Image (tube, rainbow, N blue to C red; front, side, top):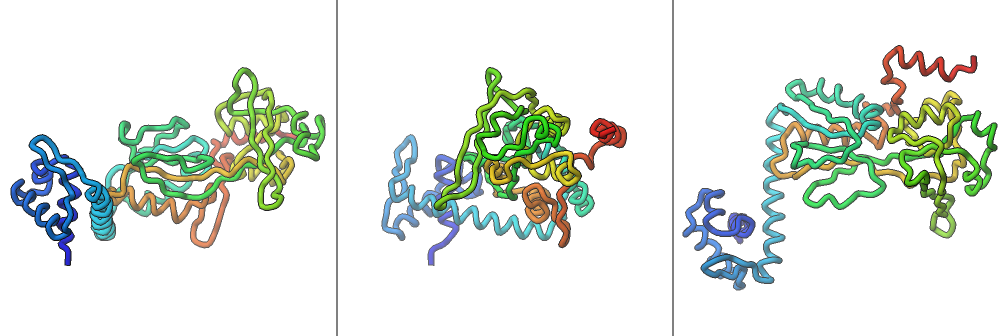
Length: 334
């Protein structure tokens, strides 16, 4: 049977760029390491490395073998990390980056529950819509919502759920400008948006499915009001400034009490994917691992799952009492 240590040694030699560097990491003399790799090649009856006095390079067979060696090594490390996570109580600091609205509506509600469960853990939350460089800025986990899971290079991606958006407007706006019956009717409504270029914005909508394919329509519009924050836009929509697409979790309460109305229920933007990215599974801090597992267990898109109960928190629940009272007064018919 093949000695799996040789696979580890081979991967380290290649990734460290030579026998000397790999030997220092592994604590093995360079001469013994070189002999082990030579014996490995002899057993496999194939040359894995081209050796010169200046450098090592992989043969075609070596490139193929390296992929499997690295996978075996990473799985072994993951198994060891999993045992350590069970045996060691999570402790230390977790640095998390989170978009503003996601923090206000969902993650901000969950983190105190996580910290109560693991009292030795501290959390530093960076709440911003800026895309952070995890390695450069020392961030352990970044939470993101995207239309698709982007290629994150060397980062690991953990899928957490979906965030659905819907078209919404106030009853007052629809009374003034009419209830759309067809998707083209949206063009007559005033709108608000998170961004605009030279005063114009576009919104890609997916509609009813025909022959296995969803209808598609791109609404090009000139928003009356532009703000790069969803909560700010929601206030404007509730006051009749314009129509927009908002995440369903954000406007759940306003839809329930009639401050907002869903427009053209058959049409909506593509759902966003809520996910976490982190640098690597190898050597993952037990506290970070538990945090990711906690989010995976309790976060379903933008819904919070606690036991058998599912709740959709609203940002309004997070408003200070004075702000909530002011908001209620502002939308009062009196």
